[in-house]
Amino acid sequence: MKGSIRSMVVVAFVTSAFAGVACAQSLAEPDEAAFDAGLAEMGADIFKRRCGSCHGVDARGHGPASGALKVPPSDLTQIALRRGGEFPNGEIALFIDGRFDLPAHGSYDMPIWGARLGEAIPESSLAEEIVRGKIATLIEYLKSIQRGSD
Image (cartoon, rainbow, N blue to C red; front, side):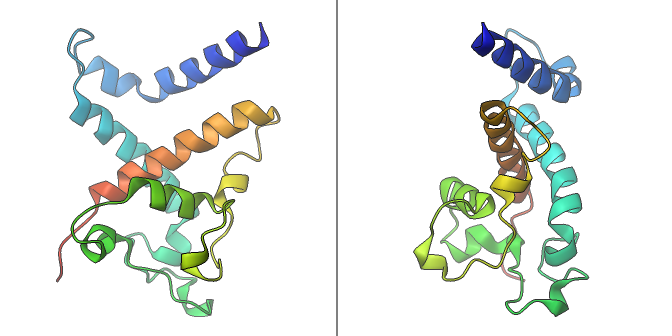
């Protein structure tokens, strides 16, 4: 019973979050682009609140707190460009989460967002599902702002 209640809460959260997107599309033929745009829009809000102080509202690494950091924040609009045109969803999700060891990235100067994004939710397995959802929206937002060299 507990698992079904958890599933219903997650479904209700996701359903309410995407109500505007769902109204704009047919249930028989879901519009994946509109769904991704809805995720990106939600991710933009999380990005501005959680990441903008370091990475800047334009995600180019020049936020108001960036000057106080030992390691300058990355330009997040060129993730795909730095990786030959491919956006590495899994790698970036792990980096945002921060709870997993990524030895190739050296020291970890970012906050451990995987812990912070779910800290207000008391039930740990539900919190984990919500954290994954929030990280997925951040990934969609970051994918939506990728640009070429300029």
